[in-house]
Image 1 (tube, rainbow, N blue to C red):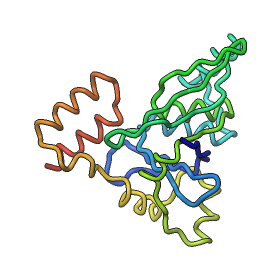
Image 2: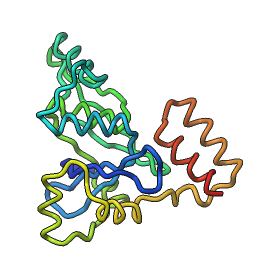
Image 3: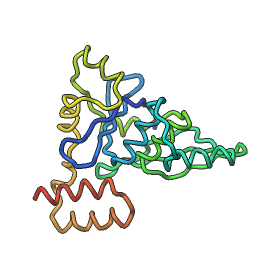
Length: 203
């Protein structure tokens, strides 16, 4: 399977999910965008890494990981978003120490926050982009403005919200959703838990 390189386009506040954000990744040699729902803490961490002028007084969790890795000569070479299951993206960190490469499983939001700190490229597989990639209808002037904004405006956020939905959960029964919620919490997958909870609340 061929890899496709992605850049970070921006972050928009989710209009339908309290405390959630949509991280938008953009195909480097194409027009498709990959929207990923992330939590507020991860959105803050990514935004701080993008905004070079902001320096937290104490290291955030992802900064601590970077400091720890630097101390022990561990490098994150790249991030690969390698799987998409029930609307949840799974990622891997490709790390290297003493010329030995290791692959470490990570939540996509954490992986991207670390990729920024290590200046590591972000990739996904073509079949994932074919499945989840979207085209955003933004006029050229708005497109230029968005490039300079980490937090996207409400117009673009609404466009994303129409694409990023919990449609994967709509076919599930309440019993199945409650089981999914329990499993997500047990696996500390709070992004999925929040989305399942929102679907249960709607019903």
